[in-house]
Length: 400
Image 1 (cartoon, rainbow, N blue to C red):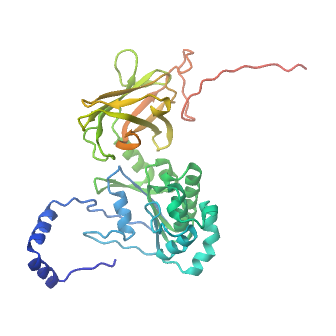
Image 2 (image 1 turned 90 degrees about the horizontal axis):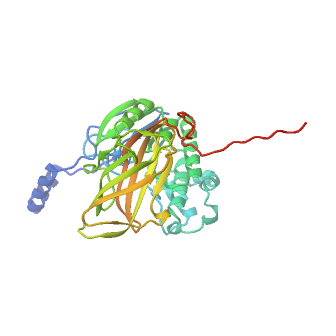
Image 3 (image 1 turned 60 degrees about the vertical axis):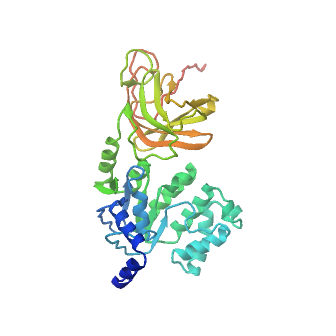
């Protein structure tokens, strides 16, 4: 890996010229935060490796080091083959250039010759779906259009190693499906893929192996199903304090401190049955000392593979909420919960007029047990689908 080092004489002269700054640097180095530490692993040619971990674990930093965007403070990276990376929306794009020009520009950054780009040009454009806007500057593209074109360039210019971060979440469902199919095609051709995602279904379908990163360290590596199971088992269940969670996003003017899910009737219990009424309690603290209006809450419920099941929000119902200066709780009542028996994961965020205040992914995990959803006196079980549907049946006879 290329890196620029100072000689001993240069370091000594810098210390003599700037003694105060040098002393400050020495002191700050003692308090350094290690985004990654002692992460060692090997990926064989043609393997598809899933990289799993919570927000802030160090996954994106790892890919940036592998892409040579960031250099490691210690250690080294040995990679054999041309690397294509898609780490952020529009990475390597110039906003003033058109989509057409950026295909050539980005291809050149990836080390491709003009002839190679021209051979793949039509295929790149068709896959991206931005044909009508090809001669429009990309600064006018939506984030979805940006990621479609960026992924299309990275995937079609024949990298021997493809690094993909969570940016696929920006695209729509149809394009995500195309991307996953393309990554599967890349892998089947014997090329190597390193894939970071919170979508466990995508990780499971694409990868043979996975690594789990926690707090900047390689915690576990092995078969993808084993790593996913271990990762999901570490998510706290039912009512859980969220006060000390560090992997949160937002400005924290309002902070979610606890999330509880329990039946709304009868004595308190943390066992939920299909078909019963439940309440989701969100406790919060207001850090500003003043009332904040126009509070928007979104509760996302996912299965254990990260597939979205449903979302609960106050804004579509035109239910106005505020965050009082003394803190408090919000309550979301869900009548006759329609989830089939199984384990579920909750993501939650709070916004103020569209501005993100607090966002915690995988806040809690809860289990729904088989219950009398249809009120027939019989417990209902199914291992197909994610929800029950109210329904009625009839029949008629055909005259002979």
